[in-house]
Image 1 (cartoon, one colour):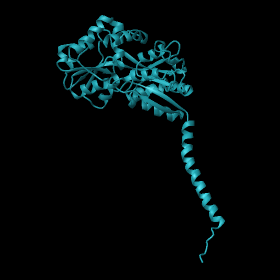
Image 2 (tube, one colour):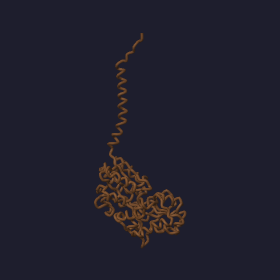
Image 3 (cartoon, rainbow, N blue to C red):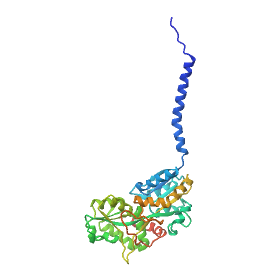
Image 4 (tube, one colour):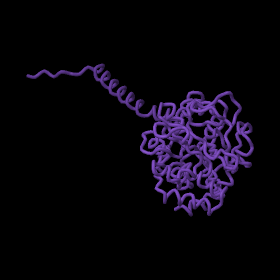
Length: 349
């Protein structure tokens, strides 16, 4: 006769308690982190500023405020245009809270399309009036500039070019010259500025000369920089941040501000811009990020990292790769450049 072994009640209860506890632990690990992430304040920022520079601001902002930054970056070839098209496509269901643009024309385009929200940051009062929208749709800050760069192992100082128009001369095309596509990014902004200042015919003739003379037209300003730094071409047209970054790292480059003589037009100043997206999901954290970005401390960080070179706040600091601050700039406003942008782009396609 087999002996039946009866399980004691306290043993059954112990196993039951164990499995219930295990289930609750798994459930907690699954649900609670999600709740904490969801409840944590955040802001979605679309930015055309290179990640190596913008990330320093994002990290500092997160550390100082506890607000998580969810950043969306562009790609070099399409630069700002890709992000702007995305914001336009998302107009009925905005995903971005803030647009931080490395230039200004595309920001003004979003204003024209009614995709920006008015926000007059208290920090904007410290920015020169000409660099902020009178109705509060955008604010400019922390400018860069367009520059020529030469490879110093290939070009002697007495031979340096002095104008963007030198790029089309046989002296330089025979040694190799490069610019970025004039339909994207700051090169597109520069093209529109030339159309605004020189007129359609003269500006078109310049770009036709660029093409016909054999100047290399490449996907972005960083590609221009790399071609010149590697010696594949002798001269290129790019931005101060691309040039400075390479110079600081020891690349054999010299940065030159073009068209500085008495009767010449000067170079283009390129302020960045920031704006709040209309009907965004996180307007309050978006405003806090804009306030933070427009502060003097944030602008200094952008100078220290090498992205900006011309501060709009008064500060005792200079860029690392040059010291001459007496630069002649093109006499154009953001609105003037924007007014000629479509004309320039349609003409150059």
